[in-house]
Amino acid sequence: MVKNLLNQKPYTFPEYTNNKMQNILTIGEMYCGPGGIGLAAKNTNISLNNKKYCFKHIWATDNHYDTCITYQKNIPLKSEKSFKVICEDIRELEIEKLPYVDGLLYGFPCNDFSNVGKTEGLYGKFGPLYTFGVKFIDRNNPKFFLAENVSGISVANSGKAFQQIYNDLSNAGTHGYKIAAHHYKFEEYGIPQARHRYILVGLRNDLNLNFKIPKPKFRNNFKTCKEAIENPPILDHFYNHEFTKQTSKVIERLKKIKPGENAWTAELPNDLKLNVSDAKLSMIYKRLDPNSPAYTVTGSGGGGTHIYHWSEPRSLTNRERARLQTFPDNFIFHGSKESIRRQIGMAVPVEGASIILEAILKTFAGIDYPNIEESHQFLNQKEFNF
Image (cartoon, rainbow, N blue to C red; front, side, top):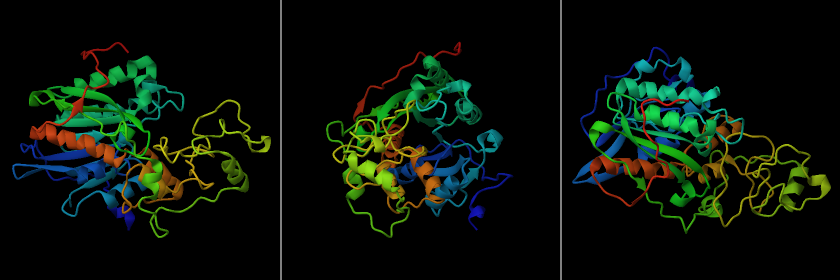
């Protein structure tokens, strides 16, 4: 049965040690999600002097059961028989039993850093969970890490949260890490979605390597949401392409909203206006502009937050959302329709992650590539008065 796919306690792994080979980098994922970064790592490789540089999965963790099933079904190669997906709350996880990997990939929970919510930062329930990645780094000294979070992290706790996280990661482990912190606008990297995220790539100081931010190629030539969704056409038999039944009132409301408009900017008759006074989020019943990238795909929210088609009076299907996140059509999500929506919205765009991971491989291979200055530079200090 499906449950047998997930590793249960006690965790058992082959013995892994500090890998001396720079061309095959073992990786572990914490808060792995359905596999946006994982699939990118699986598919990303480069060749130099007849040597292939690539990643090798060892383990992944997440606390959401359907998400773990999706990851386990789609990510491991047949040759990665020892690969483990551990489905457990990180606070109950035995971090000390996770084996060494060359690289830690982790998009730590964004709930307390998102601009949608209380933005409690490190004072919230989820904000401190980044520390479990720091604990792993302290114990194992991986060669590199990649940490990802939402734009709001830069202002949480008046900016002190981001500084604290940066310092903790910089000073983690025996040698510490040189970090390149950048605010990536994924539409500038060819993703058909305006999705902005902070990503920190840290390289262990003793390696004497410098990660450079890959230069975006699509600043003046964005990929549109229409192109992503319609080319090639999504066929009826595709997985995760179930339509949501819209009420007659929602259909009538959407017919009055033009592409690019939302429930607040459109000229709606009184009977179709929303009776809401305390929250006017721009995404509410917002229809896509077919000539632009989509707005940010989210994983939760009530009526009006499901992303709406530019010409048809309906919300997008999960397969259409997955295309905006650049998941291939043969990537099958598992769970209910709302569970799958959650998984897609929580993921990192596959093709965006691949660009960054390829840059990491090139850094280890000593291959130069077009780059830009990082957007965030912090003063690294041993102690920070939070």
